[in-house]
Amino acid sequence: MSRHSKNNTALAFFTHYEKSQLKYGTQKQRLGRDSMRNFDACFLCLQRAREPLCCSEGHLSCKECMFENILAQKREIGRQQKLYQEQQQLLEGERQRDVDAANNAEIAKFEQTETQFRPSMMSAATDIGEGKRLMDGKVYKSVQTDDGVVYQYDKEENRRRAIEAAEAPASSLTKKKALPSFWIPSLTPDAKLVVVQAPKLETICTATETPHPVSVKKLVHVKFTDAKGDPTQRVCPACLKTLTNGSKLVVLKNCGHLLCRGCCGKFVRPSHKCHICDVKCKDRDIIELQSDGTGFTSGGGKVESTKVNVAFQ
Ligand SMILES: [Zn+2]
Ligand SMILES: [Zn+2]
Ligand SMILES: [Zn+2]
Ligand SMILES: [Zn+2]
Image 1 (spheres, rainbow, N blue to C red):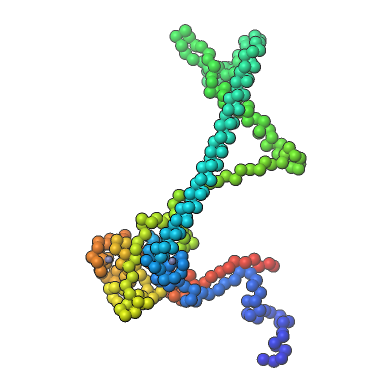
Image 2: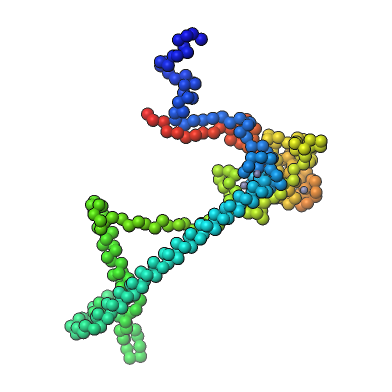
């Protein structure tokens, strides 16, 4: 390397190193084996799972971690639900107040018209269709009786009209809001209530980017088989091969035994029984254990991580 090349920053292009130092635009990083979770590690604490549990989609976790996770979710759901109920009560109270106001408006209007006797208006009844008649601002409906057609006070229709009338000033206000002069105090928007959505009641397994529901009842206790003389290694109980991140593994739902996929195909699927404990095992009781893989693209799992960043032109 010459003396000049050490301080050379005036190249017409960026060297690979210079480009990587910029941290400009979307960054991509290849993940090696060290970034992969071990096949027998808990997806929550990333340590070797103690009292391993497995969800219905094959995600392995410690019993303690999983229970703690589910408990925390339930606590959060409870809190959200309380918040939601409180708000629903508030909204219900407001709605009731609106209805009361409409009722009062109707009564007031009725009293006003009843106390002011105006024969000219009383006689001027206009038909508004469907056998209904508008008289003195009130709606009367025709009812067939033994004495012939009689007009009766239509309570529902009048109530509906009163509610509409009560809401009318509000709608005229919203029309005013369309004006560009938003700074006028009367047109400033009110502080809107943040509507709390009804919380989802189910707990979820967050092992992947697409969470799925999980419950304590459906968790399977996974039984690993340690290698003879070496408790750090795990083997398949059927073929006694040492298990690695590259092995495809299955868990049997009914007994929790863990085998390699090859042995499962050879022994469990044809006999519909667990190879180790003879417990019944149908095809739907076989769960494929999810593994992060080996760091090779062929070894399964995600081997490249991307951090999206803005690249200015
Ligand atoms: Zn754990
Ligand atoms: Zn899961
Ligand atoms: Zn095997
Ligand atoms: Zn078994």
